[in-house]
Amino acid sequence: MHDTTTELEALKERIRALLAARQRVPLPPGPVPAAVLLPLFAQGGEYHVLFTKRTQRLNHHRGEISFPGGVFHPGDGTLRETALRETWEEVGIRPADVEILGELDDFNSVYGYLVTPFVGVFPGGYHLTVNRDEIERIITVPLSHLLDPGIFRVEDWSWKGRVHPVYFYTCGNDEVWGLTAAILKQFLDEVFPGGRGSFRPR
Image (cartoon, rainbow, N blue to C red; front, side, top):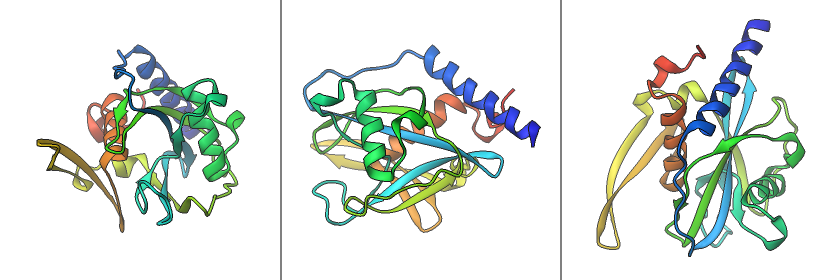
């Protein structure tokens, strides 16, 4: 158990160091600013990623699998606070219980949002409180599964006269795709550039 805890702590610190060392690519302002949290938690000796499946009652992204997040409010102060507030409102993880490890690049959403993703860790075994008005259910996936090349594919989609690659991760009966998959792919590529071969901390 101690070895596993030490490995998880080492991986967490490696993620923090890699995100701090990379040259983050911001996008020009213009679209509506928003933020999401890519939440990690330890379970069964490895880190898992938490996703939310959104309800059919929402105006945007209905029924899609997403990271917790939403639109920046002036009272937030920073986009980091936006990601933490939205995570608290959607799944009940208190901001003080999330350890932010770093940021990824900005992403443009097809719905007109400029999304800043944050990567954070919250305690394993956490009691989650789901906001049923926004979230149908929570989905958790081990990092080792997300690093399996057999679950990943790319499709070329046309949008506004241009062809764009769209990423897909198959997780059982669920499929992570679009903006969420693009954010996830950047995180996995940055932290595990060798795929499963670089999964264990060195």
